[in-house]
Length: 349
Ligand code: CUA
Image (cartoon, rainbow, N blue to C red; front, side, top):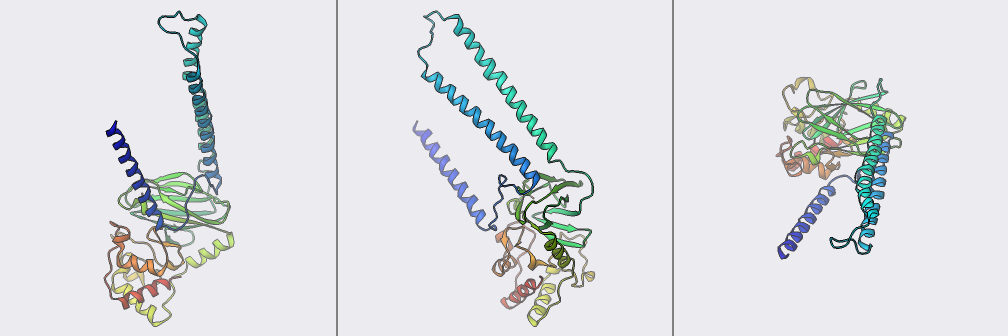
């Protein structure tokens, strides 16, 4: 008995520890906490509805079982080996396992199965060309986002017009990832050498957090992204701005920062459109995120840090502290160079 209590205490302490460590992870993430039961798109609404139906059925059955349990406990004395059982009681005894053990579960499971199939059909990706087509490539551990028709390349942030179905083609550059925006749709895997499609739609403007939902290595938990749903006008101006090349450095500090960007080697992994990319051969290199409009983004490092100067500095100097195992190397430079580099990165609106 004593060892059992000790074991139980140890288990409880361990659970609290894991819960707290989960909390510490949330602390460095931006404040959006995606909730599948707060859907903002038609497909997510269908999935949430299925969840409520299953919860409702489960609750009813739970209450019935608990009710029967109490009825059995409160019932009077039963027949024993010594007393002769009444024949009616015997029939009643057979009826319960057949009704409660076979018939009821069959009916309930058939309802749940039928409703799941109905939901599956309702959220299936519709065919036909969509107004907006986006390509998303999963990489360890960030998301490359391309708008081929508009000539836009960005990272960890997908902008979409509100109220319109948007087709996202999913590919992976390395292992299996899974694309999941809980408030807009279910999960869709990114499988090597295959293109999967998912159609998402947001009913209201807002920022919806997405996550990688398939364990893909050390930094799987830090492979997040943001979906920004905007009015058509805001979306159009975002596309217009993103399709431009990077702004030229406007003052001495940003000019120096651009030199640091070139000399320190950032340029070999990170594209800044307009910064004479033609001279840089990036073939065979594991690409880092396109930084042409870095300053327009809400987050950095796969949505694990909000974008501000302090986080940017920490990420450049010691990325392995934030995301151990990521391909971003530590950059050693003096504070003057660092400040200039940060000024340059912040000029990439
Ligand atoms: Cu990518 Cu988990």
